[in-house]
Length: 128
Image (cartoon, rainbow, N blue to C red):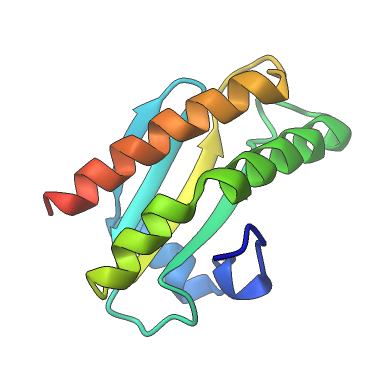
């Protein structure tokens, strides 16, 4: 399995994003909050994810984009276990990854926290 992050793995479309936001479950692990939902909508990939940095926390677009780049890279490098689980159990998962910290964290910290949150999500969907 490659470490790429193609368009098919990005959560797009108003209906799927609304489904995740409105009726999905939430897990928090500072500096992130993750909204997730097992979807019945047929998706191109077993896991689709979107990243968000609220404007009220980071008013400058440059800072929001920098944080989203770091979040995407950390997810791209550490997603294999989650993808493998969803593929073997034939599940469709939609994720919304929200950055909640006020300060800009370095990449190493974001990657460590991403690994921990991915483990929490995997544990939650395993017991669902």
